[in-house]
Length: 418
Image 1 (cartoon, rainbow, N blue to C red):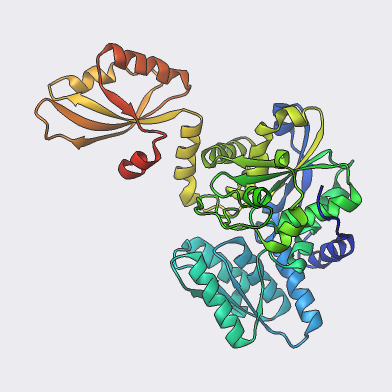
Image 2: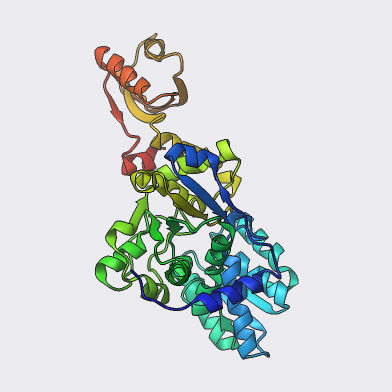
């Protein structure tokens, strides 16, 4: 299926190396998901590393290897707005070396502060560029001028070997080898490491790869036969929304078949995040929920089989929770927005409210235009507890002769007015 490279030795060495920092992350059967999908589903909880993502593994392994080759090396540089920055910061403090971490000026304050906490006095954070490409260019220029070591987030063989330690652990932790493994894909470091390791220790295991719909860089590369740059990327799934998959990871993934490639819609990912939070108490970031979200696309494939999902990260800023909840409600069709031509007469609003059901709730009401003499344009948001309630509501609105437009899934219009 994929290029056969014996990564077992480096991966096991990396697993032993990270043991100096933290115990193996939990890997256990999840009863809720197993019952829901009629399968034996296990979760590898990379959201429970010290930096709440698997990125610490690659950073620690690559830094250790680089220092073994050059013991005088004491300056590491990276560019990241998220988990990689935190992993590098933690590794710098662990090894007692200096790190300079470049982050876009648009990086949320929470991520900046966590990076500083993990690195302490060993790191310096530099805020450069509105866009990541500018940040990356500045980081590489500085690294060259300062004769530092640039620690790439995924396009590095030692980083990939470090990420492969995830597979070393779950293969040791599971009672039997998994029939199916589901992996989230961003730059490809985790996928490349796990694929190469399993090719040697469990070649019969089927592997599926999940990318966000707004950034399917692996799928694009497989189609083109080489890494290509996506023309646009939806940054919502910031831990996996990568414009181009790494060249080194792709060398291990280039023989992946189209049937193994899955894309997860961003709004559906939000529904999965809310489900795992409400039912299991598990906090996942959007990228961390990718593998679990894909279970619904594979329900016929996985029925009755042993499945391992990598929950890759839990660095979630709860200030984003209202947005995640909103997007989840839209996907589940429990919330809709529409523009209504409201008659400009006394009692018109009451007449509309009388059309609502017992579980329908007005979440937003805003006049967009009230200058018309007979009618005004109103933006209305409605929440309910079952999708069929909207069928009933729209039927009543049609019978009442109301003119309206559902803009819930009209991206251009909803972005302008919501």
